[in-house]
Image 1 (tube, rainbow, N blue to C red):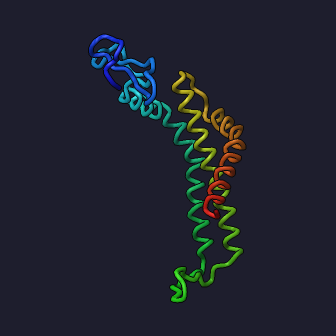
Image 2 (cartoon, rainbow, N blue to C red; image 1 turned 180 degrees about the vertical axis):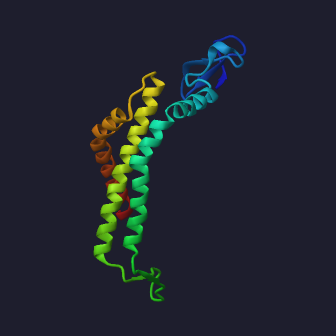
Image 3 (cartoon, rainbow, N blue to C red; image 1 turned 120 degrees about the vertical axis):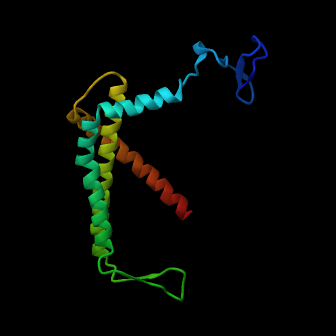
Length: 171
């Protein structure tokens, strides 16, 4: 933001690095609030929405986040069951004595189910907060239904991003 070369004194204009944009701002004037509004109002509104809908947020969490967290704990316990980590003086990586492929598969399945539950919880929470901001009040069931409808797309993008990360590490 710089003094506007075409405007009144005290008016700031945005320079994007190559051209002057049409975005102007008069510091201190109440009628020229930025496009994003006051951050304090946004924070109050966001936390206010959660406070208004706390029962629905807790219900979504109990159905999705709590079981997913328990599954992550269980998958870690299963994967490392009877496993001892031993330093290997011949290389930089330790040896995992007692680690079995079967335990790793069980742990992986539980971790995937937990990820799906976290995803459903996140999508449901986003729906609840978005509709609250729009002045609507859907039930937990409606938000859960929206989350389930959007889940395949989220999982698809998660696979794409995950594949990109794996390729980046391999290359």
